[in-house]
Length: 115
Image 1 (tube, rainbow, N blue to C red):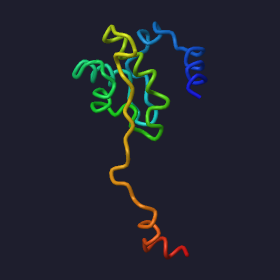
Image 2: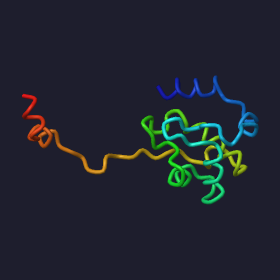
Image 3: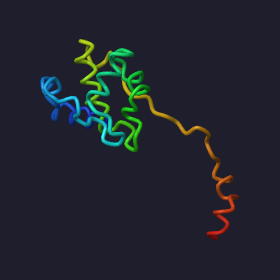
Image 4: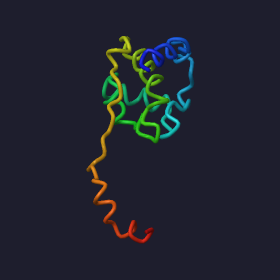
C-alpha cells in the first residue's frame, strides 16, 4: 500500500513553481478553509515545521485530517524555508481525547431507547 501511495505521489506531483504563482487567497485546506496566505503568515511566526503551522492556522485539522492538504502545505513550507520536504515533517495524528469502552456506550440511556 505504501509503495502504491508513493508511486501516485510521484506520478502526480504538483510543479513546485506553481506554488510561488498562487494568490494568497487560494484555499489549501478545504475542510478548515485555510488559505495560502494563512499558511505563509503562520510559517513566518513559528518557522516552516508543519505541526507548528498547524497549531497556528488549523491546516489539517478538518474532517480529512490532512489527507488532502498535507502534501501541498508541506511543499509550500519547504519552499518558504528553503529546505527539503523531509525537514518539514508530517502532520501528527490526533487520538481521541478519552477512549470510550464499548460497554459504556451500551449502557447509555440513548442506546437503551433504541432497543
